[in-house]
Length: 320
Ligand SMILES: Nc1ncnc2c1ncn2[C@@H]1O[C@H](COP(=O)(O)OP(=O)(O)OP(=O)(O)O)[C@@H](O)[C@H]1O
Image (cartoon, rainbow, N blue to C red; front, side, top):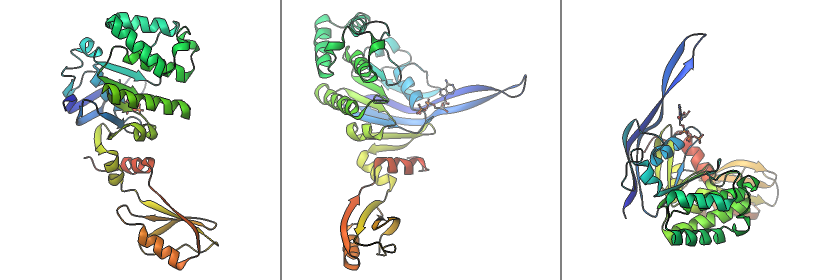
C-alpha cells in the first residue's frame, strides 16, 4: 500500500500576545503541534482524537495546506500542502460538522452546480456522482430547498455530497456527527463505511464521539499536548489503556462486599455488586469462586468501554 499522508517531525508554534497591564504586552509561544510523525496508507480509516486544545485542528489545517508548518514535513498525495494548495484541493474533501461549506441562501442544487464549475469535474462523472450520493443520502427531494432551511442532519448530508463530488482520494471529517440524533449518526456512519469499501476513499476523522471511532476506524491516533501518545489498532488501544473488566454480580440477598481472589469490589447497590479485575486475566476462576461462596441470582461481564480507555490515556500515559 502507498502512503497517501506522510507527516515527519511536524511542529507548529503560535505566538500569542497578551495584555499585561495598561500598556505592556507579553509574548508567549504555544506549541500547538510538536514532534508529530505518522503516515496513512491509501484506503485506511483513521480516527484522530485528543482532548480539547490537543492540536487536532492545527494538524488538519497543515494537512490541507491552510497552515504552514513551523518545522518538519507534510506530504499529502505526494504534494506539499501549503505550496500546492489548489492542486491538493482537487484530491481531498473536507467536512466540518460545525460549519457548512454550502452557500447558505442557495438551494442545494445550485451549490452542487457551483462546485461542479469550481472543480471542473467531467460533466458525466459529476452527474453520476451526484445521482449516486443523492440517492444514498436521501437528498433528492431537498435539492430545491435553500441550505438555511435544512435541518442539521440534512445540511450535514449536503456537506458530505459537496465534499465528494470531485472524487477526492482523501476525506477529512471534523466532528461529522456532532448534534445529530442516533438514527442520523448511524446512517452517516453506514454511508462512510460504504464509501471506504466501494471507492477506497481514505478517511481521517476527528471526533469527540468515540462511537464514531468504534463504528468506523481500524486505527486510532491519539494526540495530547501536540504530540501522538498512541498510534495503533482499536484492540491495542484497549490493551494499552489497561482498563479493568468488570464482573457484575446479582446476589439473591444483600451482603457485605464479596471477597474473592483476583477481583475487588468497586461498587455495591443493594444485592448488586461490581467486581473489577485486571485486563489479561480470565474471568472463569473469579466467577467460579463467587458462585461457590455466595447465592448468585445472575452474573455478567462488562468489557471496558473506549471512553474508560481514553480517559486513562489522557490522564497521563507517556508518549509512544
Ligand atoms: N491561531 C492560533 N493562534 C494562537 N494559538 C492557537 C491558534 N490556533 C490554535 N492555537 C492553540 O494551539 C493549541 C491547539 O489547538 P487546536 O485547535 O489545534 O486543538 P484541537 O485539538 O483541535 O482542540 P478542540 O478539540 O478544542 O477543537 C491550543 O492551545 C490553541 O489555543
